[in-house]
Length: 256
Length: 252
Image (cartoon, rainbow over all chains, first blue to last red; front, side, top):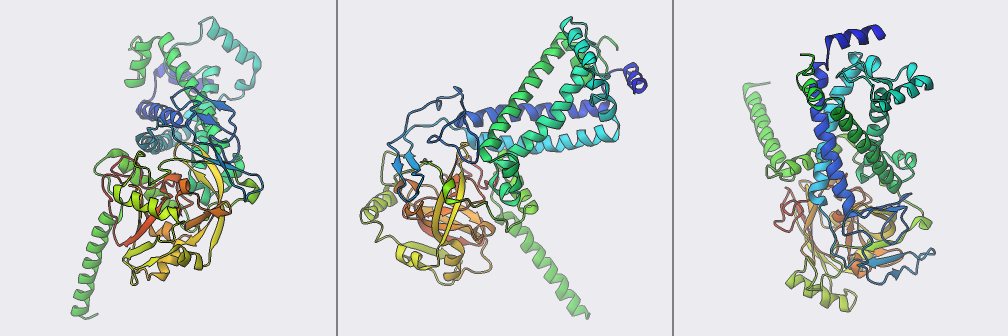
């Protein structure tokens, strides 16, 4: 393992297929984040369970649009025939809602990411990139090594050369994004799709309902956004220009 | 196979091929070369290809019924609201006064027996009651009980032709919309006249609204006055979903 990683490092930089996949995937993730945020702005309230709307309690309401805590409702009317006495209110508020384009763009970007993600995942598996460079491996479970890596990062002495081998924190970050966040985002996204849950009702059971799935979709987005921010920050810190060139032409400016 | 037969067979192939091609062009919602609408159509095709067409949306228990909200146009008779239609809006307000006794649902288009149906006529069909989840594109959801007549029963009663491909809905506000035959004939697709054990409240689409349970909330057309069955996709114009920038198919 160390040997092959060493060989790659000597070869320098990122392989061609990694570079070809990186940028379309980056575009896909960015478009998904922006359009997803715009979608959330239309209804910045999060719930747990199957149902959630302005007449039911929320676990989080975000002040990200004029819809936050808006009071544009007529007096709620009660459904007398139902024992739990649910209510319904008429909305009078002029809502911020850009979902016409934001939703369609979100799904277009999702198809895009699914396509390039499949190419990337397939290649990473077939070419051993996943096993050799991305999975944290046995040493990834060693707290001593992990803390050592954290300390190295804090001392700013973590490796800076572009491409593999990646340090333990990087491997863990890639592992969590690839095997936790992205699959979770996809599945919770599908759990909000009525035609999909009709075909696969088990999704509703797995995620404890549509609104729980929506909340998890948001939390997964937060983790992904944090990854992107740290990822870009580390690129800047370890030599923005060299790293950028390395992800485009394959070798860092300094090495070449 | 004699030469004549073969020629006839080939000609038949060519004709059906042409039909298939033109059919494909006009049986799908248009994209206008808009990349977002192309994505919508791709999702539509993918879901129709991959998902079983007969799958049922989950139905819930009475104790799962939740509070809900009424949004969009909540009063077609109010000329201050968006979506007000000067002719039909006033008509709705007149008919609402005596609980839509004079209201008639017009069923027309590719049917052998076009006709008018009163609320009483619709209530005479075997009703269907379903407790389902309404998922709004905004992000909220609510569970309600809906009672109505399966759209399929009305379409059968009117003698819908086998060539029919789309069912178009026209409302008392300016929100025309349509669904394909797969959703139209689905057992959970109903014309609802009741909600949570009472007559459909005005803000929720009285006298009848569509329930199409495998799509998002905005496809559930409220305040319906007319149904037209067509053999091709018909773009309802500037106030329709596609031209106002929304996805026509919302299984996602």
